[in-house]
Length: 262
Ligand SMILES: NC(=O)c1ccc[n+]([C@@H]2O[C@H](COP(=O)([O-])OP(=O)(O)OC[C@H]3O[C@@H](n4cnc5c(N)ncnc54)[C@H](O)[C@@H]3O)[C@@H](O)[C@H]2O)c1
Image 1 (cartoon, rainbow, N blue to C red):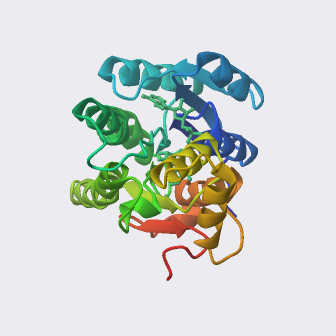
Image 2: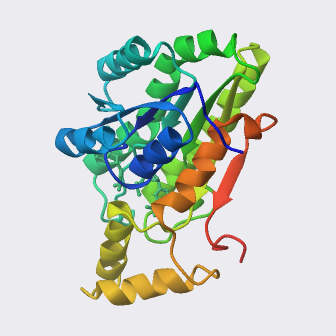
């Protein structure tokens, strides 16, 4: 199950967190993995651990995408899997957020997903012709792309966009006969650097510095009794990238400890 032998993957924002865990699990499952990020030193260390390739990739820059995809194709001979994982969080209310902050959030969380999808398409189509079940794109949305977020409405707006872009891209590629499946992942609160940022924002929004109390509030919203770990999400991404999810496209996989079940 969930094997990726012979597959080539590119993961954005994978120097740390969910992306780094995904890169490691994909390599363990037999894939050749390229990771891109802004954090060059951390990214090189992450890639070295599984003999992968690191490329500098700012997902908001078209030229960076072109170069990253070319580097992955040149090193590993093609591209079967794209994971649009890079994302940023704001943690401010509508009254507090500035226009510049909104533009930055959009550039990474929305423009980055559009550019990655657009520029990976030729290489993904090429490999799809030769493989049994085609190529795969996995987009990192969020539970905040399914239900509203009282702490970060602007982040929620971008992730809602990723949710519907995923479905629309799946339909467009199916209509065109490209054999590229597109699915999204919707994590609950995961203990990464971004997870930590959400506790800080939650504390600030109620006028305290009590990060531990904010963490406790987040924990209570997860009926399963714990917060998520990067591997909880990485396992779902590997599944959506593998041929075991061959009949899934335009779907959203919710991995949230029950938080949106209530
Ligand atoms: N942690 C959570 O609770 C959570 C919940 C739901 C969804 N997500 C989503 O999962 C994804 C990964 O989040 P994470 O928790 O691992 O966060 P993280 O902050 O630990 O990692 C995000 C990575 O993206 C990189 N990045 C940021 N801007 C970039 C850019 N312009 N170009 C390239 N790379 C860039 C960062 O350098 C970092 O390495 C994000 O899309 C996030 O929105 C996270």
